Length: 122
Image 1: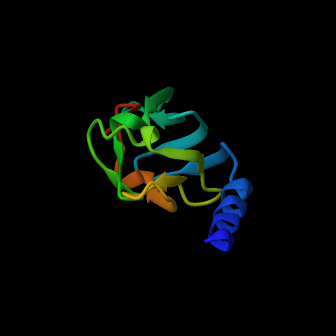
Image 2: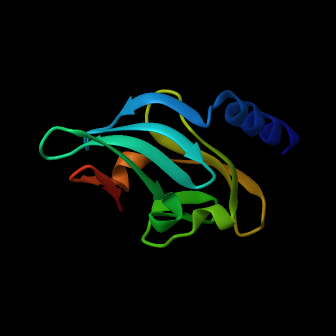
């Protein structure tokens, strides 16, 4: 278990809370994560760039150490050390399972988020 904890810690340490312009299929670029709030620039229907943000607690849940898309999921209550992956638009955290043991967990944000005329929504 100690080796697992070290491995998860190293993986999370390699992540940055600032991701350099991760393009997702919904026409957005994730720019940073602060706590549970994701900041992005999204393209509106007229082609202009819109600065937007969304609290991922509105869109993501932790169930037994796994992240899922879920309205008002409040994942951050049971997850810590979260960041954005360096290249693929994933939210990566250590999340508690039913035994309160920290587990590596990730989710592709494009599964949970959409671009609504330049604004991120669940």
